[in-house]
Length: 83
Image (cartoon, rainbow, N blue to C red):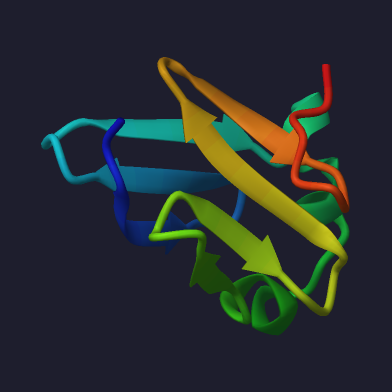
């Protein structure tokens, strides 16, 4: 599994640049990232890479995202993917 090397935030999406040279993205309007939709740019920029750079956590927003294969998934408090 590739680790997240860099996170890029735009006005409409979050991009994950991975250690294998690929990237994935998720629009703020997609189910996995709706917690980022109403956030301010400052809140979006306040993220932390966790779990050996496999999870991006936004502590102020109470949301976390991970990349699993070709998909970006939201994690719940127990760090389990939300279906």
